[in-house]
Length: 432
RNA sequence: GGAGAGGUGGCCGAGUGGUUUAAGGCGGCUGUCUUGAAAACAGUUGAGUGAAAGCUCCGGGGGUUCGAAUCCCUCCCUCUCCGCCA
Image 1: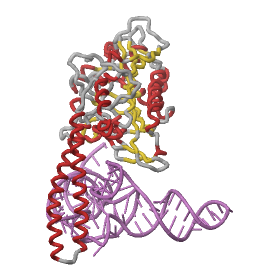
Image 2 (image 1 turned 60 degrees about the vertical axis):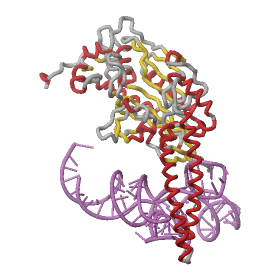
Image 3 (image 1 turned 90 degrees about the vertical axis):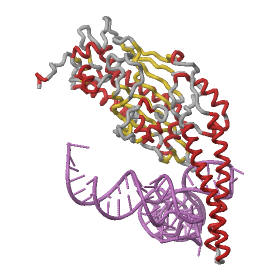
Image 4 (image 1 turned 135 degrees about the vertical axis):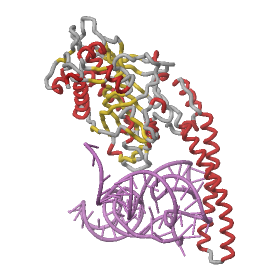
């Protein structure tokens, strides 16, 4: 949520930002609601001041007649106040609902462009190893090796689900552990394990609601939602809190499963494990002083890069332009890994700076050390990283001509020294 | 799931309809004193909104009343006991 004052004081600046974002928001409705709200608030508050004074006088007055007079006067006043209070309450609610639909404003250095075609590659890093044969897509060798079971995944959970098996499941677990160790031991993060099912307000706080309800999974009563990313519970950890400035910055990292109801056309990205309703991810979340968020964003990107460099995978950085910026972000840089089997760049991380957008929604503040008014913190987050696509990248970049693949060096200690993944044992009831 | 108790300012805790919308204590900050510190003493110390006056906030929401932390309804949460359970 952006500051209502910005819309009130610089409506034209906001309108042109919306054009750059290639989106719309109900700015005019907000402005007119705000104006009428302010007028009614002023009225009702002076009425309340009079009532407070009058009611105190009732307590002091001994004279019965005068007392009755005052009470009657205050009663009439009270009806007026109740009506206006209700008016303010309704207006407040409408105003907030509209405000929740206004996207974050991009930072000045975000390149302007209508859509993803204007995103800019700002860095490309090659890997030392490069297969010199035709690499087969991960879904082929995954099935062949018996580490991914697509059929049984769909059988038990429907489309866009799969089962990892044997060394496949083990490799993913090893990657998660290594990533968490990297962030906690090298990057100064604290590991947290949050709930996967959270209250509605949490998704409003981080910006998934109210606008993107259709991409979320919710429980049957509708009171709780499956998290689409660890960003939701981990950022909201501090909701409605006033932190001490000395506590900043706060770096938290979490591994969670993530659940997304993808609204994409059937048939797109359906092959393999690139896009499922459930996937695993290690997430990094930063709560920082507002003056520090720009430099923290740069560090966050570096920390995500460290994961790819550690795994020795080829990747590139993509500066997202205004038209492709997500609703909540003021700036966003994606990390994409190259996968030769599917022959495409796969997004494995989005590193975003939200400024105070989420902090306003979730009401996360800090108290300046020298005193003074409380202020909103800035929040940032980035994947570090998304597991299925890293699995794809490893299976394809580390592939050997015989359809097996090697395990990245940094992961080998997490796999008991194992260096390669080959065909798994037979599956099926016969084994049991 | 059943029974009972309770939710007040950073913390503890008083307050059961008005004459202080929050006593008192702890902690924090400032000052006096001191070579410095401690102690003592004095003052000060929440959030939101607003240019300010003011208004709002005693778990959330609703109600009664001229007036609610205080009475009523409802929801949430915490604690104790029982039941169930990975």
